[in-house]
Image 1 (cartoon, rainbow, N blue to C red):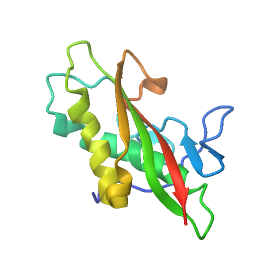
Image 2 (cartoon, rainbow, N blue to C red):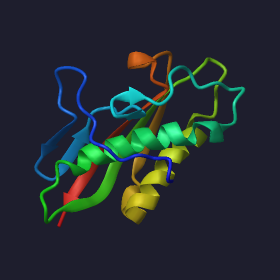
Image 3 (tube, helix red, strand yellow):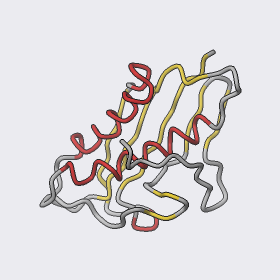
Image 4 (cartoon, rainbow, N blue to C red):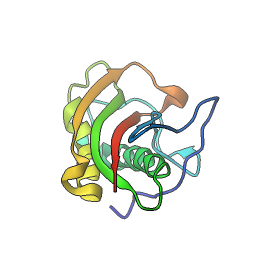
Length: 144
């Protein structure tokens, strides 16, 4: 996954990137940006192979994990991904939402091991902010 770049996103409005309540962190939806710039725009197309979308989905997932980790204290770690929601800016004919979201799950499994696999919701939408192709939101549990 050398093409995935870890950096700390910044909010594009009046919200926080992550909110923590006790040992639960909720992230805002993260898009596939690097240094504040989307690496791809537009709809995911049924005519393209799912593998075409691996990098953008994993970059968005990396961004969500990075903002979750920014809420940790030095002696803490993410003990479990509780839930992940993957929003896909999908053309009407696209039906491979779950296979595309599998790239996000694979990224979390590689980064966190079994702690990275939680429940998941995948939603196809007609548009996303800034014409982003995907948006990933995480809910994680914190442990020591």
